[in-house]
Amino acid sequence: MVTDKIEKILVIDDEVTFVKGLKLQLENHGLSVETSHNGLDGLDKIKENEYSLVVLDLMLPGMDGIEVCRRIRDFSVVPIIMLTAKEDEIEKILGLEVGADDYLNKPFNFRELLARIKALLRRVSWDDTDKEEKQQIKKYTTPIGNLSIQLDTRKTFLDSKEIILSTKEFEIFTLLSHFPGKIFSRDELLDKVWGYDYYGSPRTVDVHMRRLRAKIEAEPEEPQIICTKWGMGYYFNGQRR
Image 1 (cartoon, rainbow, N blue to C red):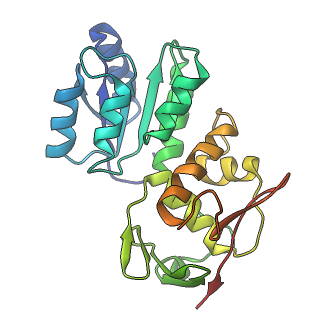
Image 2 (image 1 turned 90 degrees about the vertical axis):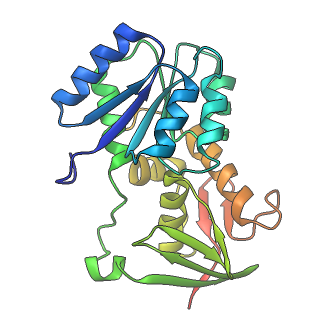
């Protein structure tokens, strides 16, 4: 893994045999794994424990994965990978809309899941940003207020109001704000935020961008902080203070 500590993961899936096998494989790669076989129990575990990441099945009995994900996002920004046996693109987009960071179709190659887990656990790094710079509180002036980003605590404030961002939302926002005015294409964002070994669709970026804008923009349909250069990509509209 990318850090010395052992990352603890929660797998929520009702297929007992599948979960046992997945737990063993993940543990063989240095991860600590706990399991749950229904949504309510999984929610309780997340409230009572600190996890580095959650692997969540879409088709759970009782409360499905979409609702579980939505409820997790009411109190936690833990990274979530959603597993689905459905090929329906709408289901995948809905999962991302309610707060999942990534999705993977069943059946899948274990190495692909492992690569996505590593990508989510890996923090964004930039070649031209040294360690001292990363510890600073970054402050910007934007068209709708003063913005500050605390990299060590991973908190974001617009004026005096804290904006609760998921892992990927924070990483996208931090990357864009670090380079005001620089346009990042979808593929560049996938590479820098999700990692070079990410296998997903560029549409993932669009879904996360909609969620991010809904939280930080006064009028998400007419964004003033994260803007779009049509045909090219996204850029941060602000100035360093």
